[in-house]
Image 1 (cartoon, helix red, strand yellow):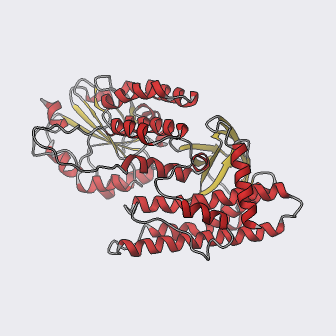
Image 2: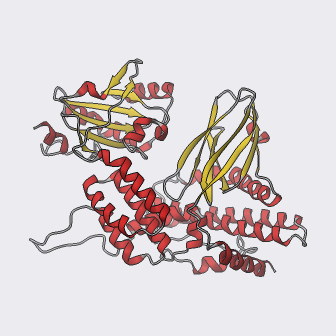
Image 3: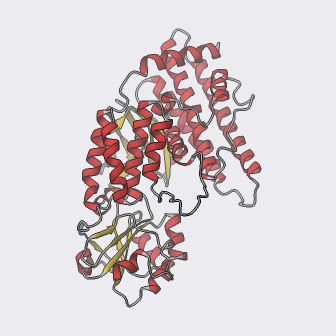
Length: 497
């Protein structure tokens, strides 16, 4: 009966819900009350069909809060509370009601959304978070000496434990739902399907990050999936090369996975040519554009990938090369929201095109003194956007930054380090700990800060190179580890001539 209910539910839901325009912007509300809260606001992150977004919820002196925020269809919400990121699903028209005591968080926290089945969903997600957040994070601490097979065994074992807990909890909750309330049972069954699918790609993304795809694939065992024959059927037929628009619409983890899979699982990743045969220079946005046109048949996924690829390209690759692909992409996008989003983004970032004046800014240094970009006209400026909690940033600072700075000592080069992810106290402590020299500035708030918005900083570390005239030389400059200091021909040397 369970299998029949799941299959019936899935078919019914997909046929009638699939026709909606899930890119259409909607709204949800966060409200509630917190006790013993000492901050003026708390923050959360939310997925979207493009990049994750961050927002702040103002808290009144008496602890009450209420505010609405944008959401597209259904997304993952990350509440940054109690030094962690609590994960829940949020939908268009949701009203999330939060309550907790900040001095006794775990036992006092509650989240509701109105309606019994939504409250059951959120309760199950909170249970899942409390039991598996820490074990999942420990996967990232596995010994480097472990063989890929042993690493995979640990990942797959935890995945199945996670599925089994969802399965058992689902069964117990189902028993509490009266038989005559079939609509509620169907909705909750849909949710259970989505939860298991999101777990599949949460763990698949871990495999991807550890370069274990496509060799390994998380799989359900008979025990963990005993309540979910229908899901087992879907997963048994799932292959990495299979596209599923229903998963794309509902599962942010699936979108993350296929974005990387399309970009990197190429048929030819190395080659040998006969001189003087010419190999096309590094141009990933161009390659992704043509690969996608020939390999992604579902229009919404194809257009979404092209849009996301262009936005990613403007944030990481050569502006002029990406701009050429931008024109081709804009001409073929069908979805109005995607087309408008791409045009708006281009209008915002085209000021970073090489040769344009670098956006000016004034930030305070570690002594509280204002420092302006205009102070350094006549010198080459190398800006590094970094973060105290950014592992790759700290790696660069420890291994490459000292040599780079020493190489250009007493030359017309200024190194500006802008910290974006920390409060002032944490930033100052990190400056002492890592002995970071150069011009040290802080832009608290990251993507909300005007400087990060002006320079399109969505990820760190990020480097920008500005010429002596104060014009953009490269808005996605080489990191300190890529600058060949012995050649005399790296981008900084060329600007000094």
